[in-house]
Image (cartoon, rainbow, N blue to C red):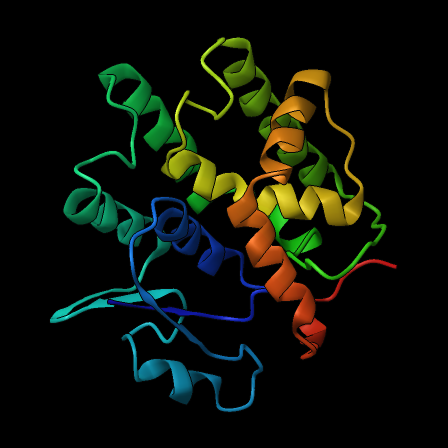
Amino acid sequence: MKLVIGNKNYSSWSLRPWMLLSTFEVEFEEVQESLRQEGLTERLSQYSPTARVPVLIDESVTVWDSLAICEYVSEKYLMGKGWPQDQALRAEARAVSAEMHAGFMGLRSELPMNCRATRKVTLSAAAKRDIARVDDIWSKRMSSGLGPWLFGDFSIADCFYAPVISRFQTYGISLSEAAGQYQSFFGEHDVLNRWIESAKQETEIIPEDEAGE
């Protein structure tokens, strides 16, 4: 099984399935492609029809969306353990994952993932609303008493918020006490730190993914 990813310093989408596979110790081959614009579509088209990363290739099966990859891995390799076992918690975990998957455009555009950097940015109202919403999700989940992860045990939901942990560290975003508790705990996670350390070793700079001062 292969997972095609982009630059670890910049590719938040790639981090999510990589995090799931690595945390659950599912064996896979990591294939990395640069996200530089030169020849990007041609290079990524060899893996999927969307010419985007991440892409999972498992023998005759190709999956080219980060959430779909995580669903596939959970079903085939984890006996469904990628999601909470409780039905109500599973529904909520899927909802907050889908919310991150499809939304938070202000946060995405103004706080691009950049593991190597320490930056300051001037936030728009949209980005501030997104940050407040993330804070609210994390705070409510930490207040549930299930912790230390969002839904008790590590799940796909945590994978989908892993890039936000990195983003908030990069740009020095202040959080409420409860949300900060989750950020601090996740920030010590060995698997996340393996990704970040690898990202810091990369030297390629993609200007359109650099933000702030």
